[in-house]
Length: 168
Image 1 (cartoon, rainbow, N blue to C red):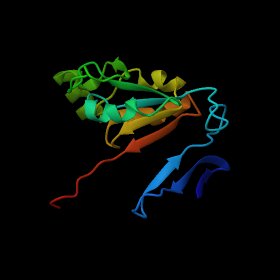
Image 2 (image 1 turned 180 degrees about the vertical axis):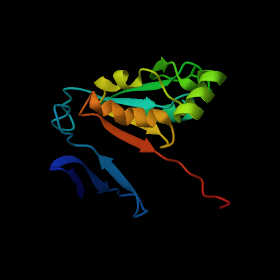
Image 3 (image 1 turned 90 degrees about the vertical axis):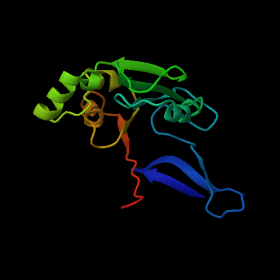
Image 4 (image 1 turned 30 degrees about the vertical axis):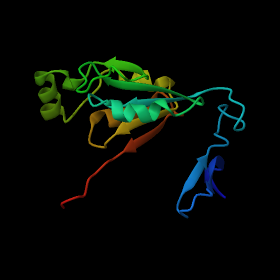
């Protein structure tokens, strides 16, 4: 059993499963700091997770977050003009005006200020969340997630960077 610790806080433990491959692991979250969970059975407050995707919120990725469990409350943030259809997503979706909503504002903020995919009002919306998950480091909304820590010191920011190295 391996127990994860950061600054003296027990986050969870990994147990090796009984499946044939020796590399398979199961993550059990037993205790998270604060007043969220005392043990695996008692739940005093749900952990609020914000999925921030600008204008790229997709149904395929949202399906992963929908099945996260009863211990988490997940909300998605996207622009008012999302590129993909949001009809089959069961998450609560917050649409914010974004610089990528029209051609003029997209290029204005991108070339004059270096703000690619800025979401207006995102920092204030993230003030009540525990975790903010941004996508890719080059989007301005990822920097906005980090700047939201000024309003909420307990906010944890996670950024996923996906790269395909095929053909390089």
